[in-house]
Length: 414
Image (tube, rainbow, N blue to C red; front, top):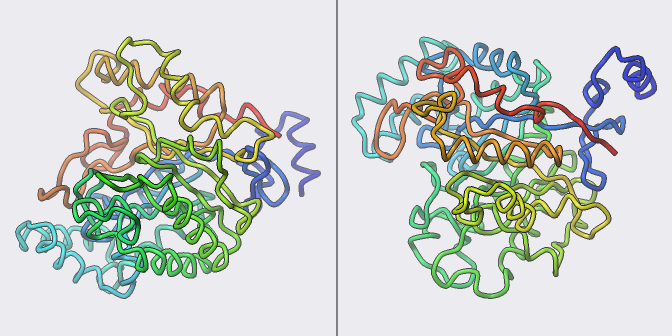
């Protein structure tokens, strides 16, 4: 198969790095490879499932089949699927009960959640008897049936919107400098148990090719004043545990300061020997990201900051060299003069795309959801940053995919 794929590429009959893909995936230097040693470039979209209902968003508007088909038609080959530790440790919860319970958890009227649940069942009748884990399973399996891979991302511990420094989901509760504002829900033992549970479950769902250990780790007040000791400790524990449970998945790891800062690994590399050839770094970048300011409207300065804090891991031949996925980026999709984008977002996206094209790294745009069942105490909330419109019918901004330029293509390889 590998020989045939290379021959077809040479003859120009197929696109490089696409066909011949076989699982499990692995890493070599800064590249992700399939089991035939062909490069796999991840072109992903985020799909939220970490909120109070513990069900992927949008099923009150469209069927799973409709959304999966749309993802496929746009050219994505991967979904970063978010979940909570609440869900990981409670897989048998009926969807009906989860929607009911979410009303009290989010402080919204019960009848509004009952109505939303009824809409979900109308679009997806099988959910009437399903658990929340059943929904995750159907989503992952239907994605894989279309050739779309899944990265399971542990977004939060307590199912809720993310992120700020007082939401209780930011830093390990067992780490130095505990404070309730940032860590009251981040139970370290539950986090490890939840990762293990999801890794075990993923073994029977081959579309899951990677697991991200935690979204946007962030310290507050006295936390992380011990030389990143806690980051090294708990990330290694989690990576070892996930790999021991499911050796086939890639292990995706973000740095400190909300997945923006990996500078500490220049001097002291994380011990990844427990998941050798399975290691991937991740970074997040938005127009408002503190570590990537743009006070002078100078793209060269911003790109230098991307490289300084995270992008340096793509430099080959270093102890820290590994693939890097930009696992969150995005913009408001309408209301501005630049094909819908406001000036700040347009300048940011143009610069980020240039950086990504030059480095040909993996990526996952935030986000597919055109709306949320619940967000921050409100029901049926429009997502202005969503790729899909409020009704989940199609693109919110038809111009956006073209703005990503050659990020869609694999232009480099081992």
